[in-house]
Length: 160
Ligand SMILES: Nc1nc2c(c(=O)[nH]1)N=C([C@H](O)[C@H](O)COP(=O)(O)OP(=O)(O)OP(=O)(O)O)CN2
Ligand SMILES: [Zn+2]
Image: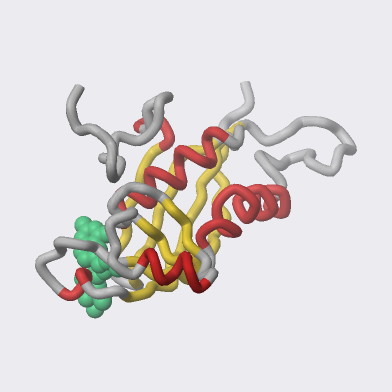
């Protein structure tokens, strides 16, 4: 039997956010150059003579898909929970806002990224999101429930 192999493609995007209620400096509106490591896992193709022979997924196809599913939405956007005072003026001035509706921590953003990539049909193994050069959060695909990540949605109900 052929063995599985992991492949990784790395992306960066720039975005702003604000952690309302944070005890420190992250309660201010600020930005990051996020780094996203997308790891896919599978058995390399054995289609003889095919463009994809020996590939789990062509790196260029991973790039196009992740760009479409995630990066285009998040890059140069304000990552919004929904409770930020600045939101109204961003909307009225036509600034780019990604209305995520969860607290935009590295943990929640990595879970969101993993869920979206799984939904897009990629054979996802894990996602690691670097928020700063010294801080990251990682989530394994197998830990994302079918119904979606378990973060609290802003405006939603915490009750069961
Ligand atoms: N567990 C988490 N803690 C913090 C998060 C987070 O998403 N998850 N986010 C923040 C801030 O948004 C921001 O990223 C600050 O992080 P921090 O690592 O403290 O940033 P620094 O610029 O101080 O990084 P250094 O490399 O240590 O200079 C806060 N906490
Ligand atoms: Zn931050």
